Length: 216
Image (cartoon, rainbow, N blue to C red):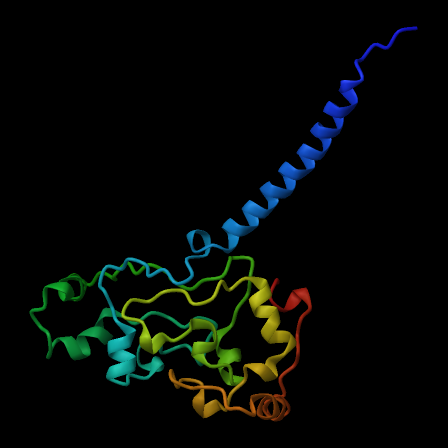
């Protein structure tokens, strides 16, 4: 009985199978690269805001404490955004006619909140509490990066689960003295691991990595 398929069909079949596997692998890699790229994560990309607020000026140069604007950061799960009244505490006296601050003045006059663009956020299925991290000695710059050097705010970390787990598994690498939590220029000392292990015990930090810690 003669062959139904030509011998070259075997080669074509192999090429098709291996080509399909290679294509799926390349596609998976491309999607993974996109997921980690600034295009998707917005890491290192300054977001457009209704007012070009500069943390570099207010925090780095003027020395404003984070809690002056983010009043609930050490008391609740949300850091909170300052009401326009907070801005006008200063700007009713200085830079009163600056064109770039007109949206702030309009917000105050009309009693209408500014629509800030969210820079740092986690998905809705993730529970994150600012206050517990602050109370355990995790500094602002650990997650938010060199905020005192940002003329416009950008996201410093992906805030993906891997980033969170790295800290939860080895908190001694990141924990700092509580009086340094809001220091935007804090640098870990050479003996960070030794200090961190001491602070982990002192602050009773648990290495929580079970799913229910963040997914409730």
